[in-house]
Every structure is written in C-alpha cells, then in structure tokens.
Length: 301
Ligand SMILES: Nc1nc2c(ncn2[C@@H]2O[C@H](COP(=O)(O)OP(=O)(O)OP(=O)(O)O)[C@@H](O)[C@H]2O)c(=O)[nH]1
Ligand SMILES: [Mg+2]
Image (cartoon, rainbow, N blue to C red):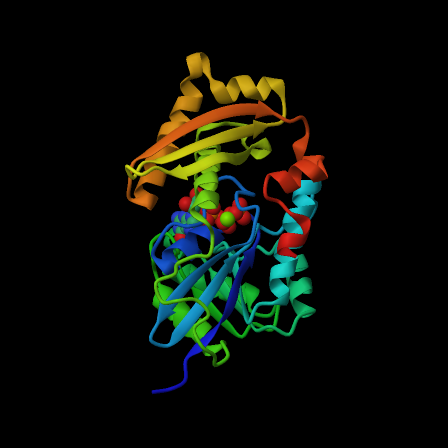
C-alpha cells in the first residue's frame, strides 16, 4: 500500500460562491453555516475528510472582500489571507460565469505571491448548460497558473469525488492529523452559536443580519441528557432590537425554534434554548467587543 497523505486545503473565493456549502458536502455533514447572503462566514472553519488514502483538512474562509467597511471586515480579510499561508493546496471557488471581476483579479494577484498549488473550482455547474463550461474554462484558465481546473456542484454533489482525487494529488505524505472519526475541531458550543446566527440571517431582512453576532452564555449537558443553552443575539441599534424580537416576540421565537431543531439534530438529543437580545452599538468597529464575540485578531492569523 502507498504511503498515507495528509494536509490542508484552503477554500477561498468571493462571497457567496458556495465555499461553505461545498465543504459541508465534501465531508458529508453540515458544519459550516451557509446562506444566500454574502459575508456569511466570518471565521476560519476546519473540517476533516478521511479515507484510505489519508486525510484532507478543508479550511473554509470568509469571502474575499475588496474593501472592509469596518473592523469586522478587516478581521475577515486577515483570516482569509492568513489561511493561504499554511495551506498545502488552495481551492479557488468561482461562480460558473466567464465574467472576471476586479475582486477576482485581486485574488489572482494574492495567489501569485504564494507558491501553493491552486485548483480553480468552478462551482454551481448545476445552474449552467454543459456547453457553456468550455467557454468559462477558456476565460479563466490563464488568469493564474492553475494546477488543475475542476467543475463541480457542491449543493448537488456533482464531481466531488474528482475534486477529492485532485486534492490528494497535491498533498504531502504524512500521518493522519486527526483521529478517523473526527469531522471538525470546532466545539459544539461554537457550532450552536453559528446555527443561531444562520437562522437570524435566514429570518431577518435588509441591513439587520449583517450586524448580528451571537454569544453563548451557558451551555450545559444535564444528567437527563438535555442540553441547556442560553445565548444572546447581539445587534447594533435599538431599532434592530425590536425587529429581532418581532411582534409579541414572534421573530425571536421563530429564530429560536429553527435553531433548536438543528442543534437537536446535531447533538442527537433534546435541547432547551433560551435567547436574549442585546444592543451593542457599532460593535463591528469595537476591538474589545469583536474579541468577546469570537473574532480574535491573533487567533486566526
Ligand atoms: N445552485 C447552486 N447553489 C449553490 C451551490 N453551492 C452553494 N449554493 C448556494 O449559494 C449560496 C451561498 O452559499 P454559501 O456556501 O453560504 O457561500 P459562501 O461562499 O460560503 O459565502 P460567504 O461565507 O458569504 O463567503 C447559498 O444560497 C447556497 O445554497 C451549488 O452548487 N449550486
Ligand atoms: Mg461561507
């Protein structure tokens, strides 16, 4: 038998191209939250794929932004840039379109500075006709010295085996870095907080969701198997607080119910979830609050 391989595959690209969705489908479980809004992912999230060839550690990153807009945005850009530095291979995800935007050109320029092999992953191919693919590949193929170009659909699970084959080709020989059953090194508590944020993104409209953070105040597993969670939904303005709570508490209840169900699926047991809403004015520009909410400058970079 040949030697085992193991290493890190960074998933990068512009917001909303389907990075987190692809990672979840590659490992077969939803770990990273997803939404149809750009800038859903804020932190680096690692998941582990293991088979008899070895182990791929996929690293999901915040979407690449041209301008940060606030300190949270700056933090997200640092996370993405920092991930490139220690990856063995980079998966650059794009939408299935021939159009190359300024953001893409900036990604290409950043990739030219690293020696890591780059695989161009054309995602969402379920949304285009087969005949269109050749034209898309043709437009992109010379933007960067791509090691490979792989068309996939994360959501529809098309060509994912091809993608893992290609990734293994670029990993160094090495032992398993996590035990075989591990899917992620994210603590359940952090995943639960992200699930609550995902449901807020899903239920809330306009500018409110972008200013939401979620903190877990209490996470305990009781003797009877019930998981008790108390969490706060942080928003930036008094006017947002009212929207998050909703008429007679209806919105908060909806967010809570959706989140509870999904956390129950994840933990395989009953969950008691209590949500509070707090206003922390302009927290996205406050270094101390950013750190408190899990966006630690040093942690990810
Ligand atoms: N049709 C189709 N939609 C997809 C596919 N992959 C992802 N999507 C959708 O694209 C949207 C964005 O998906 P995410 O996985 O959150 O995208 P992301 O790149 O992680 O976004 P950020 O974290 O904001 O950078 C969601 O509505 C997904 O359902 C795909 O293969 N096909
Ligand atoms: Mg994402």
